[in-house]
Length: 253
Image 1 (cartoon, rainbow, N blue to C red):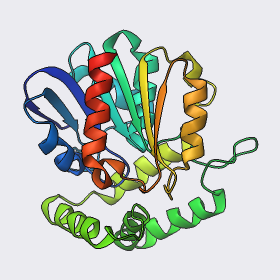
Image 2 (cartoon, rainbow, N blue to C red):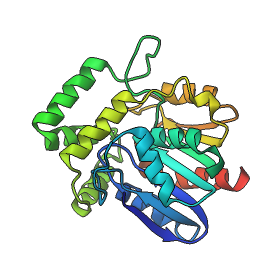
Image 3 (cartoon, helix red, strand yellow):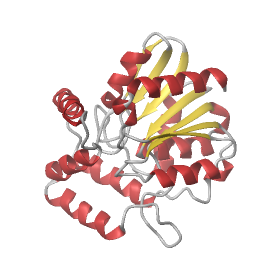
Image 4 (tube, one colour):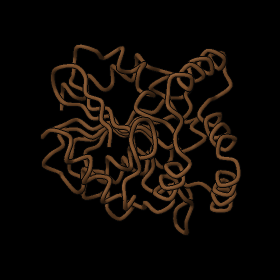
């Protein structure tokens, strides 16, 4: 698994979401340079990382654990936050701070869980991914955005991001999508005892903000910040505020 290391200072691990790579953090990194030593992960089959076998959550966090130092701050976005939560459960002594951005303990709607994606919609998306993964990926990316006065600016930044990156592999997308389908942490997150900050948005079209509110109630002592006017990518839509939240959380906790 490829992990890009840069900077000096306290160790901060960054885990991106489905379909992206570690380069999605570039705006955030630019605003946080000279503060931390970053370990920027490319999930298997995305960015510069090859597929791992088996592509299972437990194997994935073992691979991450091999390549990061002790006592880290772990920041995960979307699927990356699910992986970070799982890591904090497996290696609680190795993580000082957990920051979950736009995430959920369970991505799929289930009996007793109304804050997930409809199962039929998810199955349809998987079929689209299988038949035309480039189109499915583009449609998913557009879900990240909200149509407001900053829409064109954010869209241009997304387009620049896609020009720079190595495209994900179809296998990597399919395997990671299976993770999203399988992960269900609802019965586990109450055991997280790491200092936790949850960042979400009321206009997130991918992971309902209500799932983040549920997480905050389930993780003892956790804090939450809720944006009113952001989509699934608050660290791009509201970069300065996210940097402020992260810096203050690491400093105080």
